[in-house]
Length: 566
Figure 1: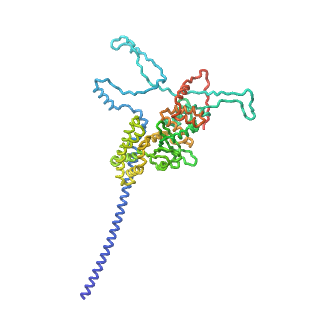
Figure 2: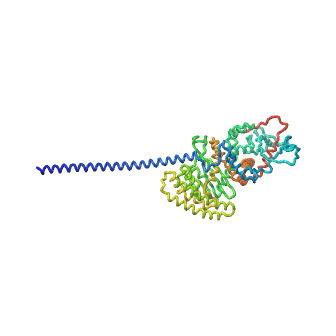
Figure 3: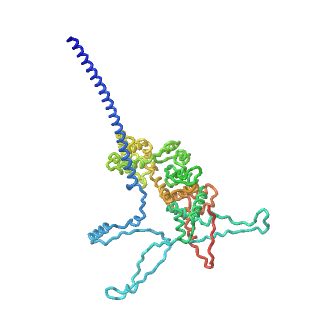
């Protein structure tokens, strides 16, 4: 009996043990499941926290871009602040007074602006005699004796002068034969017009002025129309636009010559900016196109060409560099990479773009030490380059010596920067800092090639500077109306910027080009109108001829001018 009871107890205990073991196993499974869920939750939390940090970083970066001042601005000023430039503050005035008191033995000095005006500038003399109250001595009343004169030169601006040029074309008829009036033939011969726009009322000087104001001074045509109206010339925006577009069409051969000059340069820089064309077949008015700038550089000249393209894809950009052999410098836009691998092309990239990524991070977060370090190391490259470049520009080094010494000066800064990049290769690539490191590392070969070429610079900033005036002008006129307008703008902008780059007055250059263009009959003739070939000394006699105009004292009727518009 006792054995039976013991057996039952043992069995009961075994069942309980088994049950507890099962419960323990289930609990362990549940615990493993909870731990797995916790791990997944921690991973999800880490991902969300990383995304949160990236978004905060991105917001700070965008805020800095939007509201913080930039070290790469073009020097533009607010309309109402511009008048205050150069005006001393109250603190500066007080400081100057204190300095004057301290320097009692020295004569008081004032700051002056010195402006040089050409010797052949028209001059008039206004004589100011002593007034009666100033003819007697203020101490004793004795009449003063004139001992000489004091001359002060002042600048005068004469408002725009309206001049009518009457082109009188000689006509002749054959006295020995008569025209067959039935077939519409005439024997009356007239000397053909030599005007760039023969059907227009505008002389080349006026068209050149409109183009220069629009593309050099960034004045849109509607504002120019208002200005002309105030001056007594009620010219509509449509009329001005027709002149610009027709001038662009007439000068297309010059644009082709300029393009050949760009591609014949040993170094070409490229960049692009967006532009909107409202009426383009097969495209919406909101579709964005782009304006591409190419700057051809040699030792003696610069050729600048703007080209309108419907986009910035490789298919759109490749034809612009077709057949080129030489140095090509661009930013890191992906579409340029296969172009830079073309036959005979040495592709250089831009250190300013690499630096800008780190600099923007520092601007958004001044405590970003690694970004600060990268900016400093890239700055060391510029410092090393500038020291050698100054000697080269001063004529102390020839090209070969410049390339050799620049490569030597850049060796240590480049090695230090590369070691820093490699040491921080583990930064998460999705962060802004990781993207900056990845950009610099992946483009390293293209960034360091500048050391091997005398004409090459560390960055593409010079090309960006050439496209900046177009961006400024674009903000004034916002968009082009038609493709023809965009192409005309590109060509005329090319001529203006090429003239400026070769130290030529753009308006005088355009005027002379428009005067000579009708007589061009060959490619050589058009090449003779390029900024470095055209005889600019011929522009002054043309201006002097216009300035010699005088009113007809016997005319009482107004002049009637007619011109065809597009």
